[in-house]
Image (cartoon, rainbow, N blue to C red; front, side, top):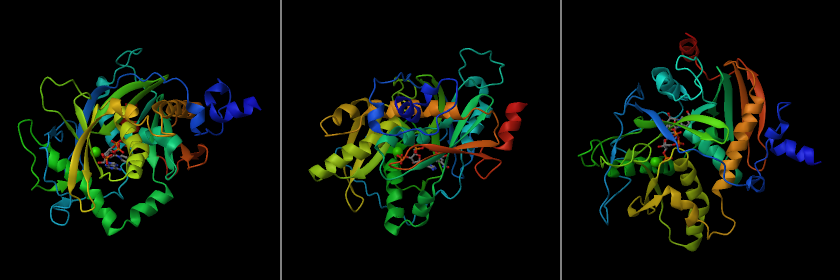
Length: 380
Ligand code: 0WD
Ligand code: CA
């Protein structure tokens, strides 16, 4: 019986033999000591321009400008007149990260390899947002996920597949929901300047095609990771710590008026905010609290490293160690399953709330996501 339970939640216990079939997401299984998570190191960055083109530079990096004590931010301003919205039905998969890798292969830190070695020397390549979903899984009760994994030249690439439920949500958003999605980007515009000595321009156009992304390397226990994440801005002081230490994450959230709202904010929102910024080593989160009409009523800074203390008064609250141990075990599970080195093979990992993580294998299917141009270039 012991063996059966172990088999179910600890694929690593299987050793070199057969992979476990499923992985449990029960939080109690992951209450162990905090696993090793190395300080993430920025190895590069890239930008996506107003037409969503990849640029191998930091042209979209913006600078944080501290708002005044009582700022005058109306997040609804410009929604109908100065807004260019990215087409979110276009699935870009890992393409931008892969373009960065092709242009910067020499910048990836390889400890045990010669620089001319064909392999990247990392175990996993993915988006930060995918890892955020993995980290928060033990506490997620609403939304499931699907993550596609393929091994190519020794590295496992992980790319999200939109679930049926997420697609329905995306295609049936209300007018109000559509507008509220704009509010976060408008907040960024109120806070960010394009130049180190500039000021924000709330009269400009909000274009959500534009993005600045950091690429970091780190290690979680045995897993060498390379991932990219979108960064909102950096502090402008030239003596600030090097990236990612100088980066600032911007968020908006509904104002907190009742103890119940405060508790929900701690339980659900701060978990997502913490996971997203902890992964790439972004030290500060600046939150704009807004009322029902999109008026910012308060701006508050949350140091990422203080968030876990902030929530300790909450009964039965989330724990960083559970998130990190689950991620560690999930990555071990993926490694134990994804054995064949073939970019045309996709191992599709699926998780739904109150279920276990399962997987299925697909060859030359709709799920294949490593593009021909990447495989060709990497093989030459
Ligand atoms: O095609 C896909 N399935 C995905 C593409 C899923 C997730 C991400 N992406 C790519 C896009 O190229 C985007 O530029 O993700 C980039 C951002 O990646 P990330 O940093 O790994 O994603 P995440 O941490 O989930 O989101 C960071 C920010 C969000 O800010 P807030 O404060 O709301 O968390 O990136 C934006 C959003 O502003 N964002 C996205 N941008 C483009 N496509 C997406 C998305 N799918 N999701 C969030
Ligand atoms: Ca943000």
